[in-house]
Length: 414
Ligand SMILES: *[C@@H]1O[C@H](CO)[C@@H](O)[C@H](O)[C@H]1NC(C)=O
Ligand SMILES: *[C@@H]1O[C@H](CO)[C@@H](O)[C@H](O)[C@H]1NC(C)=O
Ligand SMILES: *[C@@H]1O[C@H](CO)[C@@H](O)[C@H](O)[C@H]1NC(C)=O
Ligand SMILES: *[C@@H]1O[C@H](CO)[C@@H](O)[C@H](O)[C@H]1NC(C)=O
Ligand SMILES: *[C@@H]1O[C@H](CO)[C@@H](O)[C@H](O)[C@H]1NC(C)=O
Ligand SMILES: *[C@@H]1O[C@H](CO)[C@@H](O)[C@H](O)[C@H]1NC(C)=O
Image: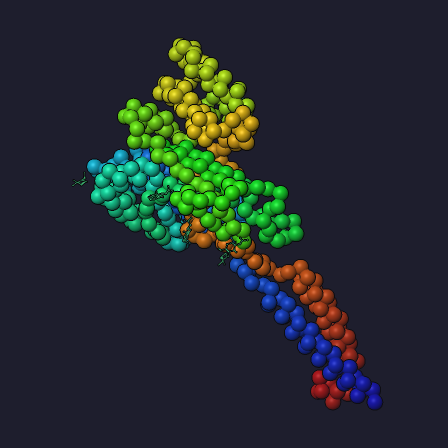
C-alpha cells in the first residue's frame, strides 16, 4: 500500500519535472539570440577628398548595436599632407602616394584580424567635380591611382567616386541628425521610437569649393533636382537640398576662396576664431567683424601675437564672406540667425558628410525601426527562475521519497 503510494508520487514528480525542464529550456533557448557572443567592435574608413585637402576618418562601433543612434565613435581623423587630390591632375600617382601615411595609421589602429572586413570608401567633392568637368580623363586617372593605393591595403575597399552636391548635403544632414538622435532614440520604455518632441535639424555646410543647404521644408518640393527622399527608421523624410559651386567666377575670387579654406574649411572655423560661434546675436557678430576688419595690421598682430600671419591676414575676408553667405545668400535675419548653431563636432565626431555616407552604404540606418532581442526578456527570465525553483523543490521531495523508500522494487521502478 505504502509502496504504491511512493511510486505514484515518484512518477508524477518525474513527469512534472520533465515538463518543467522542457519549459525552462524553451524559455531560455527562444530568447537567447544574439546575446551569446561578447561585444565585438567593427570599423569603417572614409576618405573625404575635398578641394583643398583630404582627410581619413576612422569610425568604430559595437557590432551588436549596429542600428542604434549615437553609437558610432570617431577613433581618428587623419589629415593627409599636401593639397586635395584634384591638384594632382598632372601627377596622378602623387595622389595615391599622398594617402599612404594615413592608411598606415589606420592599419595600426584596426586589429589585424578585422582589417579585411573593414568597409573603406573614398568620396570626392567639389574639387574633383570641377576637374571632371574640365578634363574627365585626368579625373579618371586620379581615381585610378587613389584606388590602386588603397587596394594595396588589406581592407574591404568599396570604391572611389565623386559625390553629387545633393549627396554631400544629404549625408551631412544624416550625420547631424543621427548624432543628435533626432531620427530614432532608444526610449525609457526600452523601445526604439521616433522622438516626438524633437524636430529634425537642417544642415548648412561650407566646403572648399561649394556650399550646401539641406532641410525638411514644410511644403512639397516641386523641383526634383533639389529634392531627396529617405525612409529612415520607419519615418519618411522629404528634404530640400541644394549645392552651390563657389568657383567659376573671377580668378581673384577663386584665389580668395582657396586661401579661406587652407586650415580647415567651414562656417564654424571662419567664425570661431573671433569667438562668434557661441550664440551671439547677428548685430553683435556684425559689429565684431566690422571692428576686426577696420583694425590696423599692427593692432591685429599685437592682439593675436601667437597666430600665424597668413591666417590673421585672411580672417577678415573669411569671416566677412561667411557672414555675407548666411545673410545675403541664405537670407538669415536677426531672428532666424539665433536658430543657427555653429558646431564642429557632436559627441567628439566631426560633423560632415562622411559619417552619413558610411551609415547609408553599410545599411546601418535601416528604413524600418530595428526589432532587437538582446538576451533574455525580463518576463522570460522571471518565469524561468520560478520554474527552476519549483523543479528544485520537486527534486528535493523526490530525493526524500527515494531515501525513505525501503522496498527494492519501488527503487527499481524509479
Ligand atoms: C585631358 O587630359 C589628357 C591627358 O592628361 C590629355 O591628353 C587631353 O588632351 C586633355 N583633354 C582636354 C580636353 O584638355
Ligand atoms: C534639373 O536638372 C536638369 C539636368 O541638370 C536640367 O536640365 C533642368 O533644367 C533642371 N530643372 C530645374 C527645374 O532646374
Ligand atoms: C512612406 O514612403 C513609402 C514609400 O517608400 C510609402 O509606401 C509610405 O506610404 C509612406 N508613408 C507615409 C506615412 O507617407
Ligand atoms: C575668445 O574667448 C576666449 C575665452 O572666452 C578668450 O580667451 C579670447 O581672447 C577670445 N578671443 C577673442 C578674439 O575675443
Ligand atoms: C544609400 O545607399 C543605398 C545602397 O545601399 C543606395 O541605393 C541609396 O541611393 C543611398 N542613398 C543615397 C541618398 O544616396
Ligand atoms: C540592422 O538592420 C538591418 C536591416 O534592417 C538588419 O538586417 C540587421 O540585422 C540589423 N542589425 C542589428 C545588429 O540589429
